[in-house]
Image (cartoon, rainbow, N blue to C red; front, top):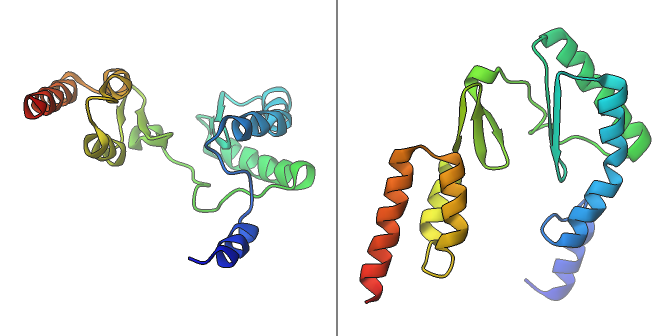
Length: 159
């Protein structure tokens, strides 16, 4: 892709590119107002935000729909932000909530298939310790054992 075309493409994008430390800091500073609004005005059963991703938990569907509208309105009027409609969903907890690469259920969690496959494809002897913590934190014993066997196979193939 020619340089000029890349520049035009980057001008069309909106938001802060998440990935480096400064963009994470800027997201926290900018979205602090959202945090304060949700925690002190809305007061949901539970609220969690990481970067520009957030979830609000309630056991009352009608209340959750009202919260959704209040948050949308706040974001547009106060921060000039719009929620991506593809990610603006309400799900029952028993169906599992996909958040930050993990599927969260009322009584547990697991790494998403996409992230598990990505880890397997990128795994090598230089990065296995980083992935090891992630696997141990979000996986059952069967997947942890599979991960360990993959590492052992990579060690055998190296020597």
